Image (cartoon, rainbow, N blue to C red):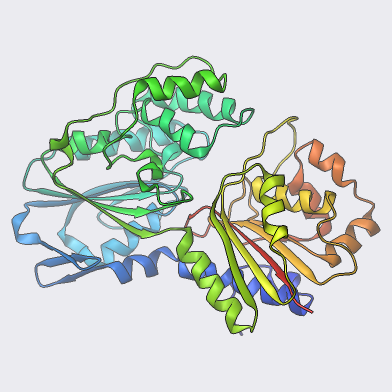
Length: 426
């Protein structure tokens, strides 16, 4: 029996087209598996550490330290320990759940709102990095979700909560939000590189940011920041986000002379794997975008405008929703599934299947997303569910829980943005 990364695969795969769509999704998830990504990019031969082919002579360093933050960081730390072992002097990473590491302390933080645990881990990471010299090598795991999980000092956590809550009611993009975050933190926006100076830094980047703006992953702790306090203040003012105490980010080149950032994975990794799998099924594949930031309805219009028979339309990004009325449960992906039903983008007499899902497996809930097709429409009609009512209350989770169409993976240990698929096969 095949082991599925989608826990309820068999319950969902009730039609041939559903089964194909779900298998394509699982191929995408397998391509971004954190342990496999580390194993393919990092190795040690003798005293030489190779990262994507670049050698680092370990005899030049007295200590190797590992720090990390984001949804992939704990899994990545576990994989790094298998490669570096006792060469690691100390380390600390924060993700969503602890793992059984020996040399690296792991913390289970909260996301998207930071908590005391985030601050505790941030302090530990700060202390490890701060106490470094030119004979230290610091491996920094930078992954999606790190902007919320990495917090130091405590004032950043308090302002981070305020910023997140305000952003729910604005049209602010994730890149704009991260510009503000960089100017609230001692560690983000290149702050970690400054604190670590003059140590050598290897940044392992697991990108969740649509497009190739890798300096925005986890708000760029190992990248020189190109933005200013004025840029952050402009975003705050234009979006009516409130009042924040902003700080400058380091601009001196010397702090980044010995920083080597390696992008190991992004949403393109997942989408390319999904494209290949679709072609194996004899379906034409069309990647329309890997940087969808549009409002959800506009994003869906772009996806469905490309629809063709016997084809798979693929997209990735973080479409925006504005929460007009609270009280419900669910994230962007479940919300998009509801929008498809409301706007009748899939009808009861066709064979299209639409899925939007969070690559980290957690769409602001314990569900990754939802599958929508004519079977969904039949169940909605039978249960007499009011799509507009659930949309108005931002309660997509409870809607799809009733219809039985939620995709459950659990936390995947990966995070490369949201992924979308529209399959049409006669």
